[in-house]
Structure formats: C-alpha cells, structure tokens
Image (tube, rainbow, N blue to C red; front, top):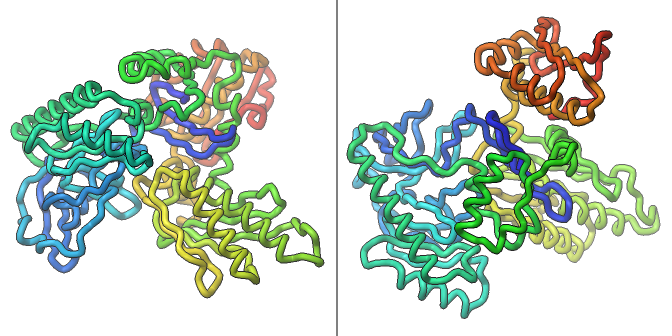
Length: 511
C-alpha cells in the first residue's frame, strides 16, 4: 500500500506478480457502498425500473429486482472489494410484482450504491441495504442467514450458520458469515452484529431527520475497506509506506485479528515501495493495447463502448515449427488464457468480453484452453462467467462491473484528437510528478530540479494544491521550481536537473 494525503494505492501481488491495483483520490468521489435518502424521479413500467435522485450528476438506476420485496439473498460473501453487499450475490426469482405498485414519483426511500457512474450511465442502486463488517454482512431488510460459498467444509458451514442464528435476535434482519470467519468465536460474531445493528439504527435516525436527496452513510475508504474485506492469513505480508496509515492498520488488526500483526510491515527503505516491487512499471503497461506473452505470442486488448475484444496471436513463437503447429497454437492459447485472466483483474475490465483465441483443430484442446481460462478467472473477486467456445471460435464472457476501468479513471478524452484517444488529467499529472520527484530524491543524485508543465497542470497546482512545492521541497530536500510551457501537451512534463537544466525525465518519470 502506498498512501499520501492526495491519493492511496493498493497493489495485490500473487507469486510476486501484480494481479490487482486499486486507487482512490478525494476528487474521485467514490460512492459504491454509500447509502442515500433518495427521491424517485420517474417510474418506468416498460423496463420495470425507476430513476432515483440521490444528489449526483445523473440519477441512479433502480431495477425492480433491487427493491426490498423479500428474501432474495443467496449464501455469498459479497466481499468484492467495494465493501457493499447490496444487490450482489442474489439468486433472483423469475417474477416480481410490478414496480409501479411499489414506487411512485416523488417518493423517498433509502438506497445503496452498487455500481459507480460509468460513461453516460448514472450509479446503479439497490434498496436491499447491507452493512459489511470484518466477519459479517448485516442485511436489515432480510431474514436469511447465510455462509460464504468460499467456506467449503459442510460441518464448518453448519457450525457457522448455527452460531449466526444464535447471535441474530428475532425480526432483526439477516446476516451472511464472511470467509475470514472460519475460526471465529460466537462472542466475536455477537459483538460485530451488535455494532452493525447499532450502525443501522443511526442510519435510520439520520434518514428520518434528513431531506432527500442526501447522503446518510459513507462506506469505508479504500485502505480501511481493503483491510476489512481482504487481509487474512492467506496473505504472506502487508506492506505500507505511510506511517500514519500503518498505525491505523496496526490498531485495527490488533483489535480484530491479532494473529496477523506479524504480517504488517512499515516500508522504510531508500527505494520507494512500488519501485522495489516493480509495481509502477506494471501500471504503465495497463495503458498499452498489446501484452506480450512468455511464449513469444501476444494479446491485443481493445476496449469499445459495447464490449472489450481480445485477440490472441502467436507472434514469433513457432514451438516445434511446421511439424506440430497444433502444439504451438495450444501452448500460446494456454499462455494467453492465464494472462487474459490477470489483465482483466489488473485493468478492472467489466461488462461483455469477447476473446478470439487462435483456431484449434481438436475439441480436446479447445476444452483445455477454456478450462485454463476458467481456473484462473476463479481467483478473481469480481464475478465472472466464461461460456463455451462459439461456432466462430470465440469465447464470450462477462465480468462484474462495479466501477469504471482504471484507464478511464486516470485519463480523460483527448480534445486534440476528437475523442479517438485519451490524456491524463491535470490531477493525475501532478501525482506523476510527485512520485517522480520522490524517486529522484531516493536516488540521491540531484539537488536541484525544474519541472516544466502545461499551463493547465500549473493551474491545478496553484488553485488546488498551493502547498505542493513547499511540501515536496521539505520531503525531498531538493530545490524545486515549476514552470508552465504552453507548447507542451497537457499530460506531459519534463524534469530538468542542475544548473544546466539537463533533461532527466526518462530517468525518473513514473506513472
């Protein structure tokens, strides 16, 4: 974890390889998991949905299946990294009462955000509110007691379900026991339920005294949410480079799971944390269409408005050559299946995905590739489903979409190219500059640095971060100056070192 007052990054590594990256900034206005008192703007019987004003730029979308009409909650952890359990993991009945029988224009109701606004769409909402804790997810409007599907032992599941029923008073809602609760005691479950139930009472009182539209509860921010939802004995270590955040994590872990204390580490070396584990280098590759495979082949990832297409190519890899081309194709496809599953997590791609693997002659080999893809998709916290290979040789799949892909969050439509490309926002450029200067300071090779930027970036610093240069001068112990240059692109910056102002951008620049 890498955190400053301006942004927080969480990188998840498996077998020393980056597989997931999450970040947050105050200007991102993350609202997944937040609870609002909303007002119904319109009820549309034709699509059995309503639009609800929650105070965001675009009204939220509420489908009839997300109304609080009864128990539709399946045994699921709901731990998908956003902290909110509402509207996910449910086995939906085939029929619902007409939405117009339950909602009318102007009506106020409590709703929870399950998906961030994406592109032209407003946030997705549910009226089935859920409050996640470390060991439980509390659902005030349900009466169901469930256990995470990831807890597989039948005896253990029965034991946990029995414990959960005993801590749940009559007519007080439903709960799901989360994956990290395998060894938890009934006393711990009871204490967490009381805390979540008390929180729900506060939310209701706040809603009663509020006027729609207004927010009544904010979900945990990135770092605290990740620690609550993910950190367990399955992790070898958790490393953080910010002492304040480290102290918060230690305090929380000590209170909920002290056995994990020896896995929490404060990074204090001369090399920045993300540099030490090559995270920044991997992040830069997220913005590239082409991803090279170890076998010598490559995949090309092309996001579009409707879907994401992925093409697999053998490239220079020939394997056994002309004698056994099917072996070459199979090996490339298997390699691609593993990498595609990783890239979907890494880029946080959601929605419909179509993969064009290299054509294979035998059904046995097609089955091997599909199984390899499904196996590695199984590690993904987001729900995914890969269908059989189609008659055209394509694999169609879906991946749960909760927030915009990372590339959309970190960049914006380029005004110079008419929308065919994207450029980094001024806020993103400022953060790139900060990390680059900290990298230069860690190398201890420069004493003076001039940073040349586009005027929009300079304006971002002047208006939004007037303490930017003083703070970095103190933190890096370098003489720093900022100059605007209207001839530069908005997402470009140059680092000029020493009295001669030698260009050292390529040496220190990071994403």
